[in-house]
Image 1 (spheres, one colour):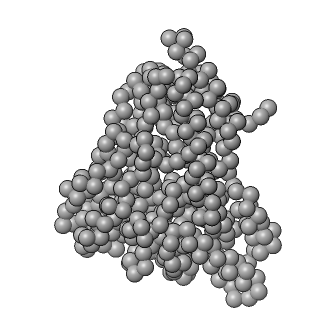
Image 2 (cartoon, rainbow, N blue to C red):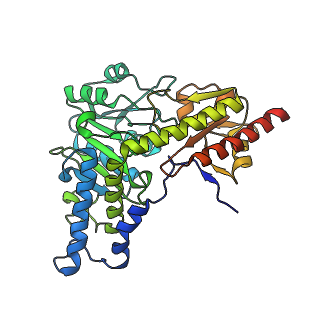
Length: 381
C-alpha cells in the first residue's frame, strides 16, 4: 500500500540525501570527541568548524556568532531566558506577539512567573504585527523584543527589519524565531537586523535534535548550560557532531538552491490552492496573500470540521488541522483565534505545506482526495 502524500513540511522535513551522505562517516567511522587533542578528535573538530561556517554563510554572519543547540526550542529558550537574565538589572519588560510558537510563548509565561512583565501584541486579520503597536508598547523597562520571522501555521512573514530597527534605536535586544523561514526565503542577519535568531535543523531537511542560535558578536548572554568550554563557553556539553554535520550540510544546500526551491514550493502550493478553490468553493485563505512563505497554504472550508476531513483523507494525504472539534466543543488554534477567523470557517481549517520533494502528481492527487472528502461532507449536509 503506498504511503500518503506528504503535505506537512512545516511540521518536519525528510532528510536530504546529501545530508545523510555527509553524516554517514560520523556515524560509522569518525566517532571521536572534537575536544580530544589526538588523532580521533581531529576530523570531528574540523567537521564542527566547517558546519559552523556553513550555517554562518547562510545567515551572512561570522562563524563565531553561531552556537549549536539541540533544536529550535532550545535556541528560543537560550535566547529569551539568556537575554532576560543578563539584562534584568536594566529592566523587566519583554514584548512578543500572540501568534508565536509555544517555544516562545511558554518561555514568556515562565518569565512572567519570575517577575517579568510581558506584552503580547495582537495581529491583524492576516497575522501581521503592526510596527506601530510595537512602538506603542515600549517602556523604559523594555529589554527584549521577540517576534517570529514567519508563522508556522499561516506562513505570514512579519516586518522583522522594521521592528529590529526600532529596537536598535531604543537599545533593546531583538530576537526572532526563524525556524520556519530558513531555507524557504532569504534570511540574512545583516538585512534583517536584530541580535538573536533561532534555527531548527529538522525544518531544513537535517535531523531532529539539532539547531543553532545566532548571537550578535559582543552581545552578552547568560549561559544556558554550565560545564566545560564548548560552544564559545556559553553552551557546555560534548558536541553532537553527527547532527551538527547534518545541519551544516543542510544550510549549505539551502543557500545553494534557495531560489530554485522557493519557486518550486510556491508553484506546488499555488497549484494546490487553485485546484481546491476550483473544486471546493467556498474556501477561505488564511494568512497574508503575498507576505507569506512560498510553501504554506492555510485554507478553511466553511461549516466543516477539519478533524473529520483528516480522518477521511489520512490514508492518502498527510496534513495538519487548524482546529480540533469534539462532541460539544471546538478548540481553535491560538493563531486563527488571534487573527479573528470566524468560527464557522476556523473549525474547518487545514494546513497544507509543500517541500522540495513535492511533485506535481502529488498535488494533483491530493486535490482530488481533498475535493472528494469536502464535497462528500457537504452533500451529507
